[in-house]
Amino acid sequence: MSISAKTTALILLMGILLSLSAFFIQRNVIYPAFHDIEVDYARNNIDRVVRRLEAQRETIDFTVYDWSAWNDTYSFIQTGDPEYIESNLYPETFMNFGFDVALFLDLDGEPVWGKVFDFPSEGGFVDLTETYLDEAVATIAGFRKRIDSETDIDNQNTSGIVELDGIPVLFAMRPVVKSDGSGPHQGYVVFGQFLDEELITTLSEQIVQEFSIEPVLDTGVPASSDTYTLEIIDRSALSASKIYSIEGTPSLRATAILPRKITELGKEITFYGVALLVFLCTLLAAALLALFRWMVVKPIMSLKADISSISNAMDYSLRANIRNNDEIGALSREFNSMLGMIESNNTELLRLNAELTSKHQKVLEIQSELQSANAELKRLSEHDPLTGLSNRLALEKKLEQAWEILSRTGDPLSVMLADIDHFKLYNDRYGHQAGDEALKQVAVALTEAAQRKSDMAARYGGEEFLLVLPGTDTGAAMEIAASLREQVIAANIEHDYSPVEPFLTISIGISTVVPSSDLTMEDLISAADKALYKVKERGRNSFGYEPVEPPPANSR
Image (cartoon, rainbow, N blue to C red):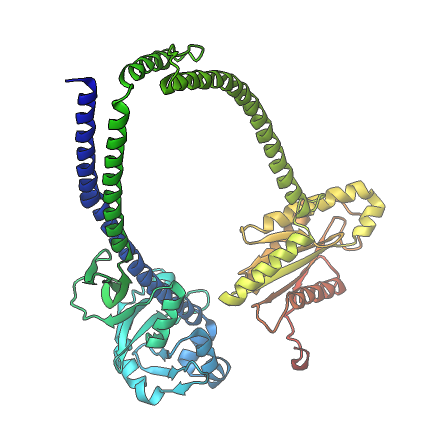
């Protein structure tokens, strides 16, 4: 049998095998892969639904934490103070949070204060307390037994789902403690949210995925977080659902209806892919049969031998020896031309690569120098060059940050304004160089006083310093001031011109406040300045406290 006949038979056989292989791969590999992608897509979408529900629960629990760990709530749960209700417990408060149920329970689960609202989308509210309060207390109060009072205060909480008139309510509960987390427990704060159609629609829009929920019965068996239920509705849609569990208890079944676009696309790709490959194989076989009837075998094999020799030798200076005046000869000449270009380009590429490596190294060095310069510039912009303490720019940033955080947590913020007594006389007596050294020694004492990462010591003026103490109450601030004063005295810096003592002393003004919208950072610093002024009037070398005076009502 001739080479042409053998080649013809081989081409036809390969075309048939390729077509069958393509059909097998498309049907048993590619199409199932599309199905797997569709299943993963469905699971990912239902997981996003469950994560959004969990995020909603965490938001409620975070707000309950703010309210339950608050001295005002701690007092209210014991006394039922009507002023607390008037100042805090009005419908607009819970409308802003989006909470429909608010309960303040005593230790026996009895309501000290409770409300159930409905906030229609068109505005306003409907008081549903008389209709649902007793049912809400009866179904939620028992959850207080789940709270382990022996754990850390951050973990003393519980959450769950209850039904009021057939509507699921997502709620969170925490014990009432003082602002610093100490006890004993005096009751419980509960906030809840109706998981009605309006809220589910809102959540669906947020995650761009429509879904529905339905309560599930508590069988007492912990639910697996990896269990999915996927059901094919028809060729165009499937249903994906998953149990949302709270504290290991099955609470809701979330369900989403998803289009089966991926599977449909896989079917189309499979069909057209197989058809296209069969067509191409047929076309290729016909073309090759026509070519092989002419003159292809010997010149191609000769050219192949030349190419193999050059390729194995990896010597691009070699050339193919075919000299025919036909297409194969032209191919040989083009191949030789290409080898010439490869040889030239390979040489140039090696040169450029070496040059690029050198330039890249220089760029890395410049980038390193630039990063070091930027870091040093940032450090210089936020620190006093003489004392090394933070400057006014860094101080203002720190005060704004602490004010914003503590206004949410309800913790105190203390500041201390320290002034070196008769420092002008010290400069007159010992000179400005000695004055600079004295400032550095006082700065060291201030740095040691600001022991926590959240504290900051800053140079406020010439011989004035400001110490910011977030989360520090008045008593602790007074102790720090006393220690700071003793450290400066212990340094025993000579100052025989001082009318106070024969050594360097400082005066300190202190003020403490719980940040709120009614006050400003300037009010706090002004109070500390007033305290410093009074200390100076009493003879200096001491410290004093001045409370922050709230501004008049008409100035707010």
